[in-house]
Length: 327
Image (cartoon, rainbow, N blue to C red; front, side, top):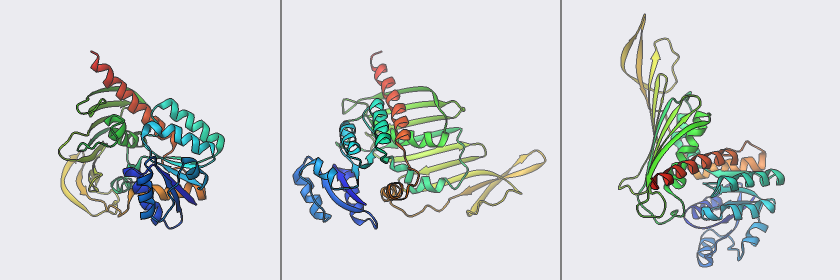
């Protein structure tokens, strides 16, 4: 399976390196509008720096698209029309309507369209899925220091959308109410934002995202009946506090009993657990899943439909934030 990487910025370079190391796929070439950079990256990973995007598309079976968000739709559509499978960085497109058009085109051409919501493959999130997750309340904080890259989109579409995607996957229920606020400080779009989303099944999620923080943070806390999970996507690590009946089967994870509470005729134990977090590279796992879908027909790990819904919620949050500026 031959892969072309289109766009060799921060993420495109990472994708190029990992594809060059891949055991079954081959990095067949790269393309970037900055030909000097493309030539340097190509030399480093022993591949071809194509002189045009058309050459990059023609000489591959699938592409990784890591261009600025504003170019996602145009580049992805060109790849789809050529019959190439696409792993496209998040957000899927600039607008929800563009995402829907890509989905229709991919279906017509029968090509795989996977989106790079890489936190789905984060070791902490993978470890947390060893538990039965039925969230009632979710608190997500995603904070970073300011970097000039990715300022073509708001912090909502750049950072918060990661957590929106994860929450939608966890809750599996339509959003019915959204409130939000945010401030543009250093760019023309919000650099810090908070949103509260209520879902039809009663679950509530509170999101905070900032690209103006002194200290980086990527944490999510999940509260549900008889359990509380704290995920640190940066370390990565998971801490679990849960209520267990004395006769409840063990989860198989080493646990510490913190105490007991009365529950009518019997007592329940308060348990603390730290499940083992697998040692893996999330982007490499993302690439592996893409190859499995293309070559072996495995289900798409992060579908375009999932990514489009995350984009729709993010865009609604951004619209609410923008409307508050006019009050």
